[in-house]
Amino acid sequence: MSSQPGSGQVAAPRWFEWAPVRGVWSRETALYKRYWASTSFAALVEPTIWLLAFGFGFGSVVGAAYGYNYRDFVATGVVATSVLFISAFGAMFGSFIRRTYQHTYDAVLAAPVDVHELVTAEASWLAAKAGLYGCAPVLVGMAFGLDPSPGMLLVPFIGFLTGLAFALFGIWMSAIVPSINTFDYVISGVLAPMLLVAGTFFPIDELPPWAAGIARLNPLYHCVELVRSAVFGRLGPADLGHVGFLLGFGALMWGLAVWKMRARMID
Amino acid sequence: MPTVSPRSIDTATPARSESAISIRGAVKRYGDVTAVDGLDLEVPYGICLGLLGPNGAGKSTTMRLLTAQSRADEGEISVLGHRLPRESKKARALMGVVPQQDNIDEELTARQNLEVFAHLYRVPKADRAAAVSRALQVAQLVDRADTKADDLSGGMRRRLLIARGLVHRPRLVLLDEPTVGLDPQVRQELWSLVAALRAEGVTTLMSTHYIEEAERLADECALMSHGKVVARGAPGALIAEHAGGHVDEHHGSPERLAEIAELAAAAGIRTRRTGPSIALLAAERQPESLREKLGAPTIRRPSSLEDVFVILTGESVE
Image (cartoon, rainbow over the protein chains, first blue to last red):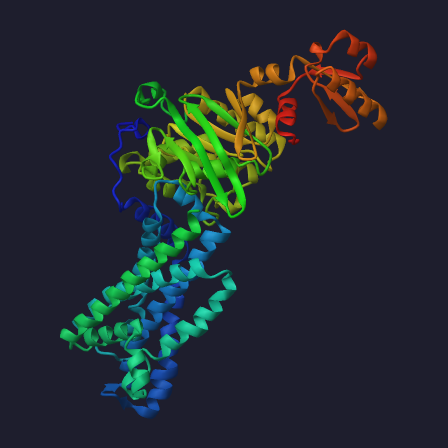
């Protein structure tokens, strides 16, 4: 062998290294190669159902609404729903199972990996997956008549950013719940309301002012706004604010996820 | 047995540190429980040290302290010359860890499990495929490389667990109860793996509560009880010091056994109860007067490490 890993002549490790990310991605791509068909099936069917039920069922009643064809309104809004499902749910259940049932994290942290690297690596995969499958509603929407636009190419990046933040949220949750059943509170009490007041199916301006104010603090709302701006070709300075909000939310979630995961893993 | 580590290990040993592992005065408390209580342990380069103790003696906590997955409340720990916990990442890059609890990724194949850890252990890209196939050979899983870990037998999984900790050719290996819960045949297979490591000069710290395992594999044993080391030495030397050359076991009624215990104590001979009998340790040292009072023993057998263990810790082990 050209190098001698056992020789002790390794450079001092940096605070953040990419090896843990490569390790996690190596595991996840191995699993993805096995399960891509079912994952992709679910990712395409879910937005199709939303679109059929709301875009066509409800949309046939309202037709054009809020200045859009209602079908296009829903197709773009549901991007946030898909991103949330993949990132937050994947992180909550995946991290909980790997930490408590499979003890995978114990094994990883015995290797030269620190908690913040593990958390980042896990979230980065889910973010990439959310970016990829966040495009599914747009593709389904196009199949139903949504006009293609160059701004659509930004959707995976918006999905990645939002997915990263919500994956970190999910990892944080996985580190604070006492049991896997406790996720019911998170799903019904946090994620479901978030999903409904994000401007997915109706603009938040339709809400009473106090509720609309709260909805502006909903990270998913900012994701929905960004997607619509990109797809409908009206990106403007306000969208920098949306990106900034998502970045801030992601940074906060990163801190909380690392903090609580460290408390769980290192005693 | 394929090689598990480079033979040029001696040249790789830095001079600045005398011990591969140095633990001084380590204390680790969990609430009211003190799992490690003033532990001192030096492991020189190139030996296999058996960390022997009953369940709850603090062996697993000691292992977790060495990977900085537990942080000591007091004391100083260094591994391969790196101070913990500050330099633990560097130390972890140089050692291999085989946990007691099977945490193989069940959804992945044997090969994929090794590939993930080749990444985590920074095996350079050019060497990665070779490192994985070498580890598969070590685990004797070349034919089962593409079998999901879930479908491997218990012994195969344990071999994979060990090979995973060796994928980067570490200079130091921590083996936490490597054979716990396995069939005797499987246990012997794993012993040959550990023996090969020792033959190649890899420093090994192996915790076990199986006396036979320690006797066969360890150059030296450290006996742990209630969070500290109570005796340390080569198995033979420990036996000679604490349990002498041979043991006399006397059978009899409970009253007779109690009487023998009293007589032996008066003569300064240590005893231990072994089921329906009483054993006099270092029986060759008993005075003639005592020998006459007790008569011929039911069984005379060589002293064992287990005898040492029982008298030093007051606890029985397997």
